[in-house]
Image (tube, rainbow, N blue to C red; front, side):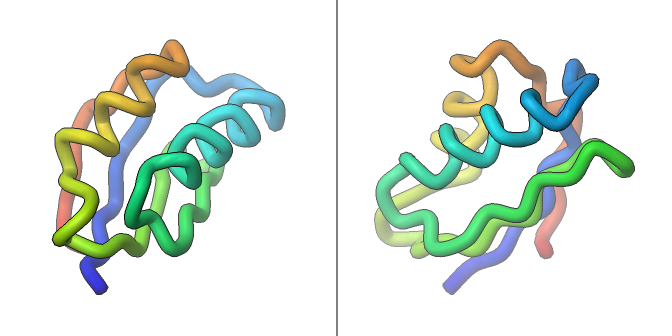
Length: 73
């Protein structure tokens, strides 16, 4: 399993956290997604053969938020 931490802008409440969690968990290969408001980030554990950082960022973007940075988790 691969881990990554995405810093996300645009989240302002618990509903935002729930939305980001839901879209990340829907990406094939994601085993776990822990999203927090403070700091605004998502810690994701995923199968690198099925998911990529780009796919994860795209899912966040489609939910209306922006990934401002990523780093290995």
